[in-house]
Image (cartoon, one colour):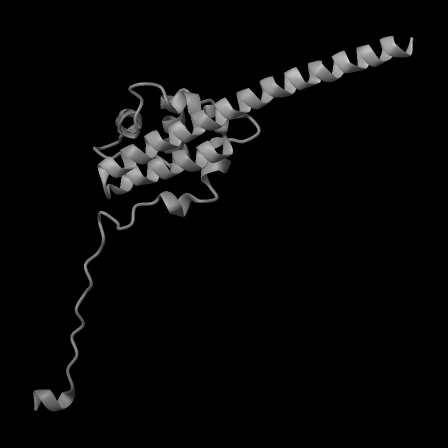
Length: 161
């Protein structure tokens, strides 16, 4: 009987190794997909150069990908781009515009980006919480409507006499 128990134990150990190998293979495949998705986003960011809004959305997606590696497959979908997600945001903004003015909150904008890539935010981690901590990282570097510095006029009483 001892030989039989030993044989059963060896089979169980062998099966555990098979399951471990499958798990490791799936884990390696997931890491490869994350690397490919990151490379795709980085390529698009390099192509667009210093466009502040593409950078904002690209950085958001890179951060989101780090926290949600399972979404890499959806970012890799052919034809889905950062520019395409910006067009989706524009469509939503046009629907909400009032008197030729349209504004989206960062949460609305990032939700549209995730929806564009068919990524469903987990109920436990809403998009607002995902985007809120580093929202300053996604803002454009310079304001489009930056006020010009006002030159100050200085004169002394002696100059007028």
